[in-house]
Length: 444
Image (cartoon, rainbow, N blue to C red; front, side):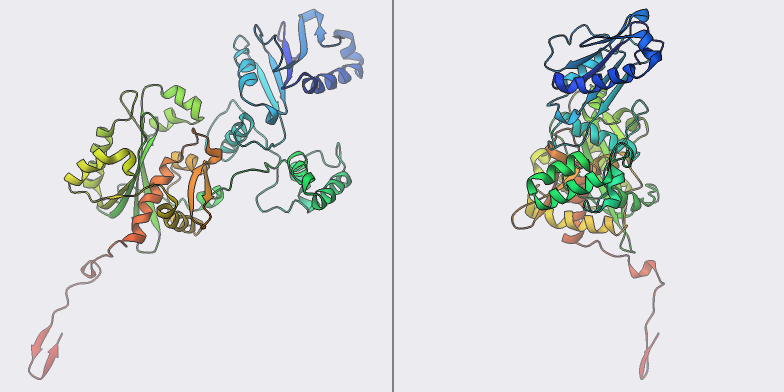
């Protein structure tokens, strides 16, 4: 990127929270030049820079503590040990400074870390969603070398997953020695897991493994569900965030089919895409999200949509949190829809959360791979109270980790246990049986 990219006056930076860390990548580049007769002819090495005089290009180390962050015209930046960054500030400065370049490149190099509420963890989760196919972003190539769920970190056979240069730049015996230390010294365990196995030591407890969610997808035909009995769950936002209605349809074979309606205020939608790292605009184009006019959520629109839903399907009950829905539910009750208050505490949420988890893991919760719900499932972690009750929370309690659709589904699911859906009439499966009385007995 300094000399081979055809970029006149290239500006390349190795960046980190501290200058000494930023200099590690820079010093490695110096060593490459010193060992190449060709590069030594063109690249001049100075204490804190590498210069290609013919193209007026320069490569410097840069830290967040530097007072020279303004006025950059970045063609390439290498951000090292991103997990140590307290926020996105340095990343945003460098990213913004690429605006005048035709083909800039930002590289981020890091191990895992401790802090779940961090810029690095946000980036990690975003890359995971791209790799899983939940989000599409062709501007970003992400590679994560880490252990899989269930891998035994004491087993040397799994070390190659986290260490792609094992046997070349890294010796397996060194890893084995560090593993022995980690097993015998708890203070060394976190360092081993983070630095050698690339595992986030305080990672959240996922509610559903994404592979289980995907395996349970099934197929959903909303029109084929017309007239079927169902329960609704509503999780409504207070001002301008996403709101969700979920209808679940119990099936005779024990499966459940789920369909969602999502609503989001139209104003500022592009900023919300960036803030939440979500594809709201595309999901709206594909019909998975309804954009309502204005800056705040339109409860009247949602009310009308629920009433339309009730005309298409037999809504037995609607479970809602009265915190944001009192007026709406009063209107719905007047329209003949039975509404049930369901607050978001452990006692009310625990049974349906556990029940829905089981049915997903059994492959019986059919959701048709709704992309909004699939994005939200990756944002769910399970938290437990001292009595063993559970409920869902956003990963690392980060506000933009939306889980509204999953909460709505759990609320709807709660009504199945509370009041099992009536089965089909016997007359739907056989004809009428006639009885007539004979002298001396009964005939059929």
